Length: 119
Image 1 (cartoon, rainbow, N blue to C red):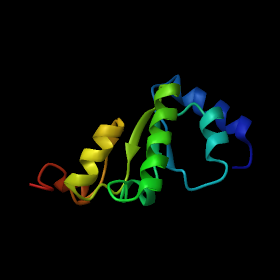
Image 2 (image 1 turned 120 degrees about the vertical axis):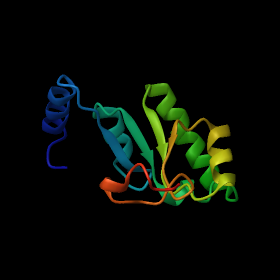
Image 3 (image 1 turned 30 degrees about the vertical axis):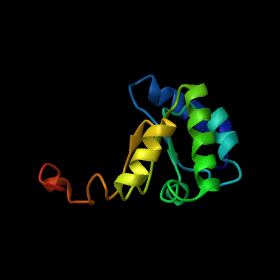
Image 4 (image 1 turned 60 degrees about the vertical axis):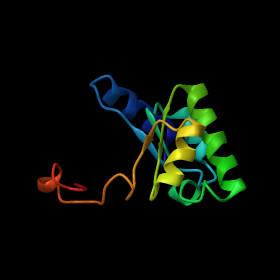
């Protein structure tokens, strides 16, 4: 990001008009914490590489727990990516993740098919 100050100003202006923002792939980049603390985001998307193994990998679970805790402290909703089975969903629910996305919920589909996908 070229200018964090300009991005923050731009986001605040759009938020005043009703837009909401998500910080994507949180946990995968070094500057993610700086972005999270500075940018006025509404959602924190937990990188799928951590979320998908949360049921069987203690380190990934600890990372997801930490991210969920930070999101809660900042009043930023959390979204876990790559939720591909019920076991992972259950662990994420126990941890307190707010939203999920992934094949367990539904497979990606064309926008015209949105109401018939995954049924």
